[in-house]
Structure formats: C-alpha cells, structure tokens
Image (cartoon, rainbow, N blue to C red; front, side, top):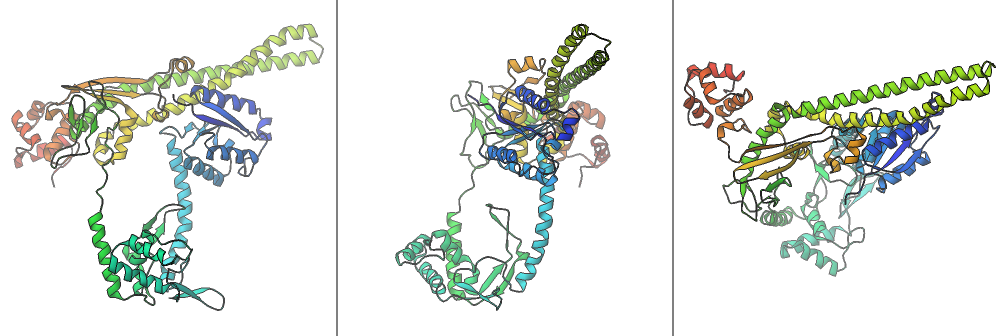
Length: 592
C-alpha cells in the first residue's frame, strides 16, 4: 500500500502583513486545502507569526523544520509565496540546497512552484545555477593561484606524502619536501616486496605481519599499496595540480595533463624499480578490466507481452544482432531498435497530429478560468457584505438603529461573510493545484513540436524521461503493438492516478489518456528515421512530416514511384538534374 506524502505548512506573516488583513489562519487554510487536493498528509505547521523575513535561518521553528526534512519526517513544505519563506536570497539558496539534498519538495502557491513536478524542478535548476555561479566565482579566484604556487614548488595544503616530511622556516611555515628517515625505508620495502611477489594484497599482509603501519596507525591495504606504488614521487617526480575536488564527500576529478605541474624531490627508489613495478600493475589492470554493465533500456518496465508477462532484454546478445524484448513464457519478441522507431511514430500521433494534449489543455484553461471567476465573485461579495456591516454598525453607534433591529439585519450578514471567508482559501487552493499541474502539461505541449528534431540528439536518460512521463504501458502482440499513453494532472513521480474523491473535489478534473494500435512490423516507408544518415532518410522524414505518400513525392519530382522507393531504401541515388528539386522539397541542402 502506497504511503501518503508527508508535508509541513510554513506560516510566516509579519506584524505589518497582519495589519493589512493577511491572517496566519487564512494562509494555513489555503495550504491545508492544497495538501488535501494532492492527497498529502499534513504533519506539522511551522508558525513564525510576526517574524521578519530578513533572516529566519536561526529561528527555532526553522531549525525544527530543517531537522524534520533531514530526518524524513516531512518530504515537502507548503508556503503561500517565496517571500513568506524568507526575503533573504542567501537563505533561499541554502533552503533550496538542503531540500534538494534530502529529496524534499518546496511548494510555493503564489508563484505556482511545486518542485515535485517537472515544471517546478526548473526552480531548483535556476536556484542551483545562482548558487553555482557564486561558488565558481570564489573557486575561480582560489584556483588561479594554485598553478603558480605549484610551479614555485610551494605547498598546496595537506600532509606530506608517505615517506616525506615538510621542512619549515623560522615562522613554522612549510617550505619544501625532504626524505622522512622513518617512513622512506618502509616505502622502499613496499616496492621490493611487490617486484618479487607481484600481489598488492600479499604485500599488505606481509607488512602487517612485520608490524608496519600507515602514518595514522592503520594496517596497510591493497588500495594503499596501489597508491604508494603508482605515485611518481617515489622516483623523485612530484606531480601536483592534477586533481580538483568536486565537493565534500565526492570523488576527485583528474585535470587535463596540460595543467599538471612536476617538481623534482629527493627519490626513494630508482627509476628502474619504479618502472618495473608499474609495468606489472598496468598488465594486471588490462587483464582484470571488467566489462561495463549493460545500460538501462529505453522502455524498461513498460513493455508487456499480450499474454500478460513483462518482457525484458536478454543480457546475452549474440554478436552482430540487435537486442530484443522477449517474453520468456510464449517466446514473443521484438527488436529494441524497431520498437523505438515505431514508438517515435506513435508519439507524434499522440502529441501533435491527434490533438489530444491540446484539447486537454484547453479544458484545463477553461477550468482554471472558471475557478478564478468564482474566487473573484466571492471576494467581491465579501467586500459588499463588510461594507453593509460597517454601515449597520455606524447607524447603531449613532442611535439611528435600535439593538433589536441591528441584530436582525447584522447577524445574517455576519454568518454569510463567515461562510464566504471559509470558502475563499479552499478556492485559492484549487486554483494553485490546477495552475501548478497544468504548467507541467504546457511544458510537454511546447516540447512536442520540436521533439522530432531533438530526439536523435537526446541522451538515453533524456529519452527515458519522455517515455516514463507519457507512457503507461506497451503491449506486444503477435502482429500488432498497443501503446497506452497517459498524461494526467498528477505528476508521475507520485506513482498514482486521481482518485474518485479527488475528481469530485476538483470538478471532474480532465485528463488525457489514449490507446493507439499499430502494426508490429510496419512497412519501412511508414517509419520515421531516427537518425538522418542518408539522403533517403532526409526525404522520408520530410515526406512523413507533410503527410505524403511516395507516389505524391514522385509527382512533385517528376519521377516514378519506384525511384522514390529506391532513394529512401538506399538502393539508388538521384541524378544531378534532380538535386535542385530535392533541395526545394526539403527546404534545406542535405548534400555535403
């Protein structure tokens, strides 16, 4: 059973804001209704009533909220707008990094930002870019001084390598490396043992038995032995400025060799001994080099056989053959490359030619507009009631309206105003919900019209995002394939569809779902080319974009239909006299 997303509500309304009529209760109700629409569970309300937004990071409520994020007690925080979270840009950057690090969502209702949705994740990207720019500015100034210090042979920080020690001047500052009389013999002994036994673990074990330890008192390991053997400093060549840190607790990255700096230091072993040991290590690495693990397949988890069994790509692929999705139960199969080409064609039908997404978004816009009109109507009605109530209070205070008559007219108005006051944050929450979810739909629609130009250039993980976000299921039959496309207002990251209760709450919220059937092995002339490698690929792509048959193109070119077929299949090439016609048909020059 799927657990509900646990969220907190952040309320920060300064004294000045409260004077303007923005009550903490109103903000809390609006956030609560939004959470209810998303079927999220509100765990905690963090109330910073009357607190200024200039700096909130050290506030006890903030610390409690961040602790709950870090301990996974909440996985999202809802607030009315970014300025309510904090007015301090640096603190906003800090909040963003902490939430992203712990895979928690930030939901700003005023700016229609929900970082659990594809469109909302753009906010993280923008914030990360700002933070990265600030870090790179600082890091750039520091990095500029490193090569200069390295070329001068000055220390760049850190302890001296094993077998060496730093000499210091009168002020106690390190100046240059010298041989360490206690560690150097051990490092030399490591080379001698390895040249004889040719096993790093064996050398580490022998050192342990003899009582030798590393500088911090630990036992030698095979990885430590490898590092001490391969570092050229042991033969008198100190290599510096060849790595850079990618951040705390992250791997170090090797810089381009053009940036490396070498300094001469006293050697511990001879060149011959160092070279002999490293030749052995290089040969061992070539022999033990592991084969890379297979990459995740494009349609992983989405492909089913018509018998109901999930289909997988076999880990063993004979040389020269394309990988297949195969059903182990009934042996039904389809080539991965063929499935991608067919999917590419059907995706166009779903996103562009069929008009399904456009129709869905039109309904969405209409629904948002209706809700906005309802909110405006309620707000205006509330203002009228308040004016009428103020008029009655004034008449009563001036003695023109007796108490009995005042209560008779005032109490119904007060009750009606209270009812409207309760409905306004609920309607606002519905509008927030719709706006945030339809931002994701609008983003998909914009991408749809360029996806065919971009698809061949996309990385595998980018294609996976498209297929996972839009595809519910792919069923492979004996002769045809069934694609179930599904775009709903609930992000795929939530792994659920709208419940009946949610549809009732949101006035039968529209969603786009369609099933398309196509031939399992359609004629080559009906398939879009994934990559434009030949002139025929260019012609077929343009023909299918225009919705033309091969005979239609033949009439345009003044040739027979078989000629177009020959060009598209690569069996023949056009004569020089037809090059102008081809360029005019394509609207660009495909020739080198």
